[in-house]
Image (cartoon, rainbow, N blue to C red; front, top):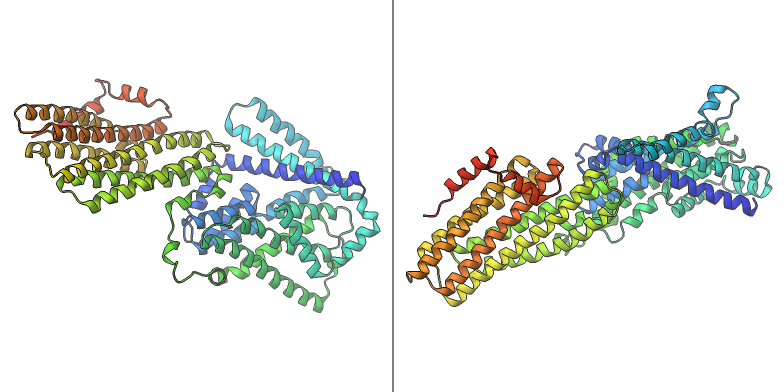
Amino acid sequence: MNLMGVVTLIGGLALFLYGMDVMGKGLTNLSGGQMESLLSKLTSNRLFAVLLGLGVTAVIQSSSATTVMVVGFVNSGIMKLAQAAGVIMGANIGTTVTSWLMSLTGIQSDQIILQIMKPTFFSPILAAIGVIFILFCKEKRKKDIGSILVGFAILMFGMETMSGAVKPLANDPNFTKLMTAFTNPILGVIAGAVLTAIIQSSSASVGILQALCMTGSVPFAVALPVIMGQNIGTCVTALISSIGASKNAKRAAMIHLYFNLIGVAIFMAVFYILNAIFKFSFLSEMATPAGIAIIHSIFNISVTIVLFPFLDKLVKLACFTIRDKEDDAEQERANDLARLDERFLTQPAVAVDQGQAVLLSMAAKSMSAFRIAVGLLDGFSEEKAEQVDTLENEVDHYQDALGAYLVKASERELLEHDSERVSVYLQNIGDLERISDRASNIVHSFREMNRKKIAFSDDGVQDLKVLTSAVTEVSDLTLQALQKEDPAIAENVEPLEEVVDRLTHQVRKRHIARLRDGSCTVELGNILADLSTNMERVSDHCSNLASSLLLVDKGGYDTHEYLTEYRRKDNEHFRVKYEQMADKYQLP
């Protein structure tokens, strides 16, 4: 092969990989992120895990991408190792779909029906239809379909380009000699593993092998061990992605490696023992693209069937390899922030879901900080005050990590709904962080009172308790609405927030009256003003959180416009709920 042939081969491989990426993204977008979300909500049914791994890989056209996602899920603690093993097995079967698509390039016949099935005939047609969809259709779904068609056409064109580039090798004695060397099964496995490890795509390396088969110079005796090696080489991507991850994530990557290593060892041993007895004649025949697809499928399906009953043994082997230290078993507990795994950014829909999960944890901590803080009204406790300080510090960490993660997710290609969610979550982070800050301010006020040995009058305490109860209910309703994603609960927040505004005004007014009759001091009045202000601000932030949930549900964007509209006097729901809450929370 001359220099031009090498350049053409590299260009064909580049087109092949790009076409696979475009088609995979189009299929992912068309599924609306549902396939990836299914993975994150996997049940404990192992057979279902295998089928799910197969389905997801068939959709996104990459077993490596599926396995990397699985490593991320295990790292974040939302998938167990046994579940991960099932998905990995299914992914190995799902990746064979690509080799069957590429086998279409090997159709050789003068019959019109078979000619129509050749990619050289239908790929340009699909590309033309896809371009029309992308350029002239406004509907997102049709544009995604266009991307799938164009990606498939580019993939097939890349395959044809590679086939054309290696065609001169058919008469090259050096190439024939090289292929003869790979009839040694061990050398063939090593060659396949190294090639796949370099380009990090078993589909691409299988495609290269299928292209070489088009020269008519690659016998099945060479192709079979190379295919075995390709299945081992594809494990490199998951192993790399597990670097720096939790021990369970590393174990998930090791399960992928062990599954393929053991599978190849068993398959090769059985096959060559049988070959020694029965002398399989097809090994001396020249391999075809369809033959490669058949071997690829038989290997992955048969290995999955054989090893599926021993799934627990694979998990134990991975745990034996990556062991726990006796002194750090407790430290292996899943951390909420581990959900913000950058592996998920390759599948933005999953990344947004993980961001939402962390946001809910952040919300629970922020609201908990507020409840503990206002509880100090019944009696100061330094231990509880320190709990609030700890929670406030944790919320700050959540804000930094989650904010940075969502910004990265926003830079990816997101569906419109997911893009809206990211925008809302970024706003929510600010409100939640400020709620924890307000809780810290409340603790500061009570610390000051405890240090100076001063206390509110009985009337002042009763007024604050009513206000505290109202704001606590606002925070509880807001948290419930966020956790359940329930607009009906969120609609009850704003009427109660208006009641809190009224109560805050009344508490301050009554304090001034007590100040005039000498039953309260200016110093305590300043502290009471700080407390009531911080509580009112917590209520305001809760209103923002609840409104953002309602806006996502109704497809709106402007919180101020929405609240103005919702508070109108002719809004029957708002009026009724406001009156109910006003009756419930009255100063004594």
